[in-house]
Length: 237
Image: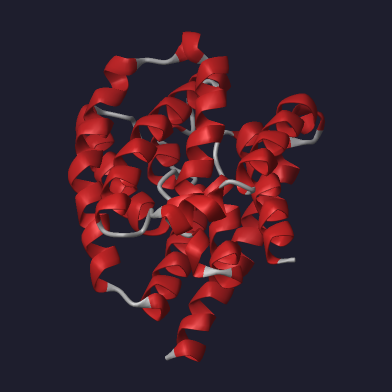
């Protein structure tokens, strides 16, 4: 039953990510953590890598590697910092941080301001993304904030390309600190078909739904799941 619920969460998150460009980990990670801490962050990052790779291949002609360089460089120390947090935090603290990451992600997504993606800002966003992504699997929102006003194909292409590179970084760090082992890998395998199905459905049917409706629904679900993860911290303490 736990595996089935985990697959449904991943399917839903992959559908949203393939429809609006990001959202897989923001939607799925807090609830997956409540099902079993083994799913976050390592397995969730593997699933994100699969979905991001599909999207990057589809939109490969719109990828601007030069513009991503600063973000990827900034992501390296951020990933190391996230790995140190994993070594330091217990399960209750990780639950709180996971919920807080989601609430931050929702707040960032609601920002009405336009921020130009300069190299310095991209590097800062890359660092924050590395810290959040490695420690909680939720690293997309800082980059999405900077790129949110770009053309849709450019947004999807470059977010996906960044996610591919950043997922590899996170997995290297997570493996070194014990958060991506054979146990985590065995928990990941059933999630991959669900992610592929969610991506397929998102690609085929996602554009038929009003984008604003999907965005509002996703942010509402994120706020609820993030709040529940933070509440569990106080229940576990």
